[in-house]
Amino acid sequence: MWKRLAIALLAAAMAPASASANYWPHHFQALFHTFPDCADANVSARIIERFNWADRNTWYRGIAITAIAGQYERTVEAFGPYPIFRRYCRGEARLSDGRHETVYYMIERGMGLAGTGYKVEYCLPGHDPWRVYDGHCRVLRR
Image (tube, rainbow, N blue to C red; front, side, top):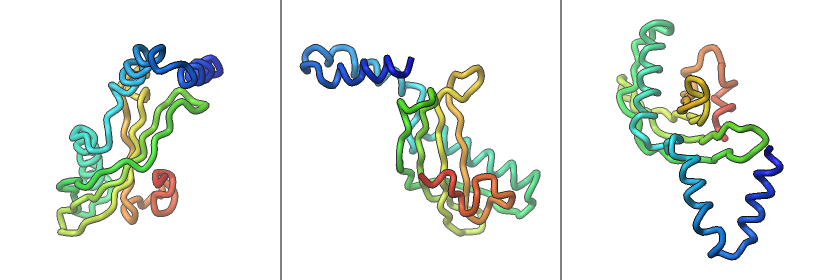
């Protein structure tokens, strides 16, 4: 299946602009329709909610994220060997104790309930006591 997709993409890239302009831009736009960008407010809200819940119920440090700003995309993995699209992002988390910490996060399309929607994974270096994303959030630093 992926070989067919790769061949179709290559053929579209080599075809004259008039032949591919009608179908491909709309097709790619539809693929990324449920794949929010890094600065999406819902993505930030998910990170804030999950971090604050974890601190209240697991870590007990008394720290909360109050806002996330300066989000930008580091890289996107799409059309690779797996049918999961990933967007790697970085931003600045403003903490309730006045500090500003870097937050690394990944948005995965097709990882929600029954393979629809998206999922967000995040990490703040120094705030991952179980090293879920390896030391200093290495897994999400793409």
